[in-house]
Amino acid sequence: RVLYENDAVVIVNKPPGVSFHSEFEPGALARLRASRDAREERLRAVHRLDKGTSGTLVFAKTADAAKKLSDGFATRAIVKYYVGISGKKPKKKMGTVTGDMARARRKAYKLTNTKDNPAVTKFVSFGAKGRRMFIFRPLTGKTHQLRVCAKSLGAPLLGDDVYSGAVAERCYLHACAI
Image 1 (spheres, rainbow, N blue to C red):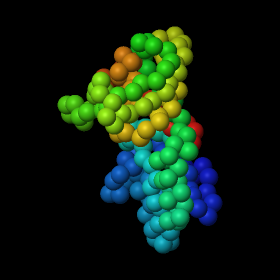
Image 2 (image 1 turned 90 degrees about the vertical axis):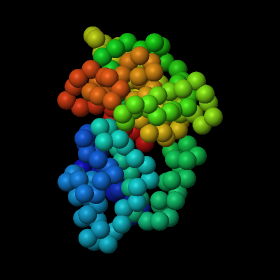
Image 3 (image 1 turned 135 degrees about the horizontal axis):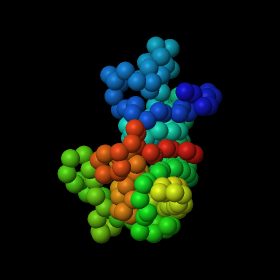
């Protein structure tokens, strides 16, 4: 679903389970990109969301917009917020999680104690009847960063089968604001 569009950008609401990367997957993003390509309007990705993550996704329609947006993400001038839900209480209610991320087994990553090229995430959490809601603000953009952050806090996200979250119909991580 298109949330906003002008001459420079198109912002969509990506549903969970839709791959951002594969143009061969019959999903909403592939159809959007194909329809734009047919009109010779090339969409340029300026950031990504994991397949299981839903929410706000920005595409640039021009090379100039792509450069400006990419620079904005790189310099952290563009701020992103995500909401996540866990079935477990975290080790701490708010703070910053910082550490390098290293490949673990399967498709997973793990947070390490080193800080050579760290993932940095600010978060706050709120509890309600067996659930915990997180608001995440990533200061870097590493693969699985927020999911690894939740896992490192002892509160993996619901439906996150890679990081052992409780079984759910989807991974409960949503890009809610940019």
